[in-house]
Image (cartoon, rainbow, N blue to C red):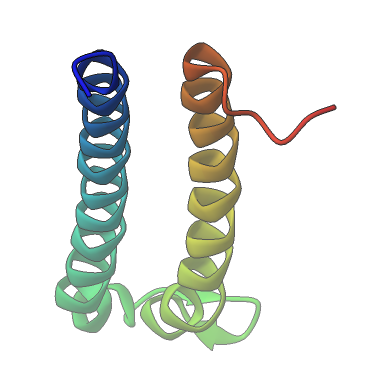
Length: 90
């Protein structure tokens, strides 16, 4: 039972690191969404591709941001898993 303690401790650190990273990425994305929503009304004064800029950022830009953040998170999580030796790569 004593030999399981270092493995459990390392696994707990890995899970904590993953959780902190996930929360950080989520907070950054939510912050960007909030900033765009707050800035949308003043940005609507400027047209972009015949749409108000605030509307365009909300409709297109945030979707692109969320997809990019998802891929960024997955890549960084893979690096964390490789460091721990738990990568899904064969």
